[in-house]
Length: 184
Image 1 (cartoon, one colour):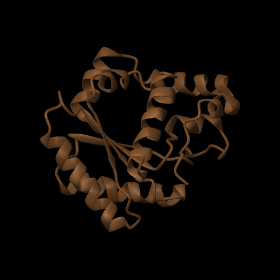
Image 2 (cartoon, helix red, strand yellow):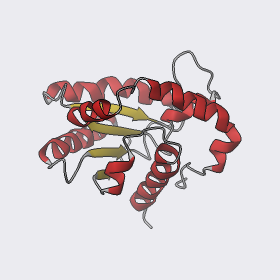
Image 3 (cartoon, one colour):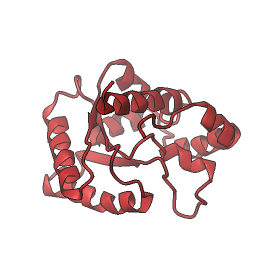
């Protein structure tokens, strides 16, 4: 497999074992099973090239029929080894939504191998809810989020349930899922 195929396989494994397997996102299974998740890999490291890739994926997602492409995972395996750099990049990513007039149409959810919520320690297991094998931007259609929230009226409880799931699982359980990167 080439590096792009490896990044997609790693990301798919993480999605299946952690996100769907632990039910961290009850809305992820349906588009996965229906093949409506688009995996895009950007091997660039520079911000300009990464923003160009993001822009292209945002445009492709909005142009696609939701029945064919519900959501996109933009995986950046060579970029942002440092979580704080990635976190800073999110402002620029949000700027792309504004520039393309996609606020309220698309939402960007961040995932990173070293994701850390404000106010938590780096090794706090609850950070794993947003930890993926590689820096990843999840591009979600707002309409899809609205439909999911209607179907799951207590969506705000997902966060708390995820924390409890991960605390029960613990670090050893998370490691046993083998959802890290295989790319070096």
